[in-house]
Amino acid sequence: MTPADLVIRSPRTVLPEGERPAAVSVRDGRIAAILPYETPASVDLGDVALLPGLVDTHVHVNEPGRTEWEGFATATRAAAAGGVTTLIDMPLNSLPPTVDPAALAAKRAAAEGACAVDVGFWGGAVPGNASALRPLHDLGVFGFKCFTSDSGVPEFPPLAPDEMKTAFREIASFGGLVIVHAEDPASLAPPSGGDYAAFLASRPPSAERRAVERVVQLAEETGVRAHILHLSAADCLDVLAKAQAGGLPVTAETCPHYLTLCDGDAGTAAFKCCPPIRDAANRDRLWQGLASGVISCVVTDHSPCTPDLKRGDFATAWGGISSLQLGLPAVWTAARARGHDLASVVRWMSQAPAALAAVPGKGGIVPGNDADLVAFAPEETFSVDPASLHHRHPVTPYEGRTLTGVVRATWLRGVRIADTPTGRLLTRSEPR
Ligand SMILES: [Zn+2]
Image 1 (cartoon, rainbow, N blue to C red):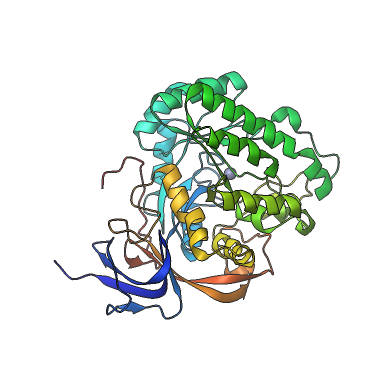
Image 2: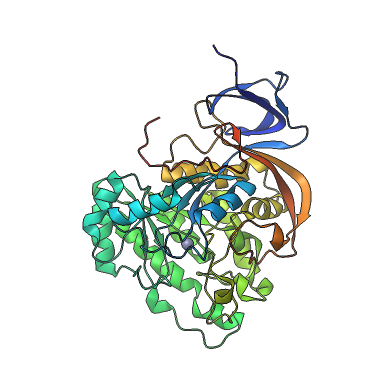
């Protein structure tokens, strides 16, 4: 056997079975073995933890077409600095949206050679593109996003109930995954003013609950695998728990902002997103949903825009929060305060998203997987300075907050991420 290219050891190595002292050997870009901690190491992390790279399945890169909002170079640099080594790009807010093979080709052309981390793509299901879904699936998209309500951009319209059924049937026919922005349009209203209370009242929990009920019903009718994106309303948890208990393949994610912020924090439009950040009691229940496993993934929904679009009041500003670089420390800070361990955070932010999207070779420190690794100082604190963010626009609701947990280094396939972009474009079916 040839010697390892790299051996990294940490007393806090986070493996699928939990955290323990171990050394990880790397050969040809992959994890070769998990060895005793006493193994001579080329990198000794001291007290710093060793995690698998995070897998963020909910990122809006916006390139091509709205690259002034965010682009592959800036988003993936922010990802690497935040311990995210794989991201899956959402099909909307770029132009064209990723709803047919030509648009996917445009995406791949824009991303090629620009990415500091590995990048895959979601396709989109919009009215009239049912015949493009199978070809996109065959080209390796990880699944299909659809909206039940207005998406915020005119080129990516929502699906009406009958169109949802058609799309779900088609996606089920080839064993694909549908991911849904679930808010019932009939339960939403324009905000009656520009403050946060008016915005929050305009998007009530019942809107999410009704849409989730419809998705569950359609999943049952069509047999499709369905995933609820960015769950904010804890009132949906019993609907999801019942569906899961009944054996339906329905999963859900939530986001760092729903777990760490609440309505009382929302001072500026930096806090605006859809569905909205709700009250502290709702936030407590989302944590319970994670602990019970009803919610399996925590991903960022990184959705930037230009600062001028974020300057309006809560009625007019763009809805979207940028947190690709801050998701891990934000979630870890709150998780540890609530008694959750680092292994749980890794399960929610790496293992479960990788499993959801079936990303080959990612999501855990396991022999054979890509050697995507993160050195994370779990006891170190820092204050969020927007100037330290690599996002194209450093607008963040976390500004000035003290967070615990600092990413010290990130490796992609065994090579420490530096200035030269070495990220690959991933496909669902990529042979290993
Ligand atoms: Zn999103």
